[in-house]
Image 1 (cartoon, one colour):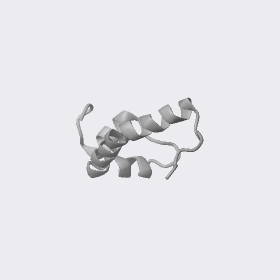
Image 2 (tube, helix red, strand yellow):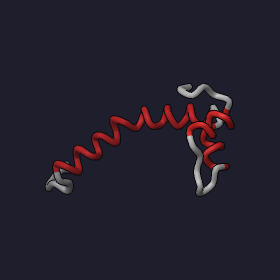
Image 3 (cartoon, one colour):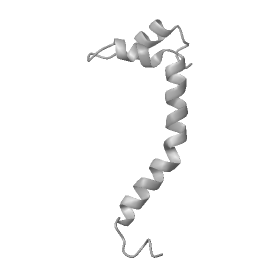
Image 4 (cartoon, one colour):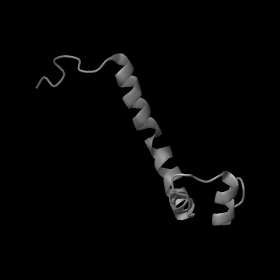
Length: 66
């Protein structure tokens, strides 16, 4: 079995993929917390205009740094 007969990615691409793998759990957890606390819904309701941090705090009733 010779799975790696020739390189298909550059070293830079390999580093990029490694960083995606390394950071995926943190991105997942941050997104999960945002979903559970209503931040994702607030952002979606904000539409194309978006929301400021103060508007998100007001809509979710979370602390400014919460």
